[in-house]
Image (cartoon, rainbow, N blue to C red; front, side, top):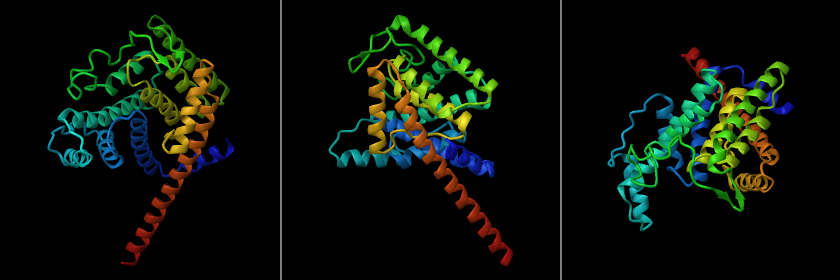
Length: 300
């Protein structure tokens, strides 16, 4: 933790550059999270769409004749897949809605300093799945049956049964209440481990599995919004094959004992350290380029 703390302190200068880097890391998280859920588009397309969303350009064209659509279409044709318009529209919307959901929960929990509540979680989920459902994928009115609503069916993850539908509301109420209590206690004590806390509530959320769909993406949004607020970073857990295997292993271990965030916390801390180093190195490049540019202008 000392090394992580030192890296966090090293990023305090150059706030605007750090913010720009963080936005790109958030976009990468959307890509990684969608990939784990077998959703969305390729990396370049995802980053482009996410940055449009984060910059406030929400009126994104979903026309089936955009350049991105044509590229995706050609890839599918080369793979001898018969593409349908809804498939492409859905993939684009999965990216945009994920980015919009991320932006919403960050705006509320981080910028507006509002507490984590069931309403915030439900509203974020409704944004995440807007226009996306099993029926008529890609059309704006198809998420009304489950967006922001707790599931009504029993769910098993492996052999482990998640809380029954009648137990979900109480479990979620308890989760957000306990998070608030822990944050209040940490604030009074002046001590907080954001990596352990984020992992704990990511783990708790996914084991409740409150929604019909989107629980994996939502638990990673909860994880990362806590990290943004209290560590100033995001982590893309499971981004690479080894990390992905560890992420899945941590999830399986947690489910086997009815919830245990220890292995996930270790993974989050390690990935957080990598993210901090990456952000620091990128910031150093920005400063070097800026210095070189100033020197060049001084010689002119």
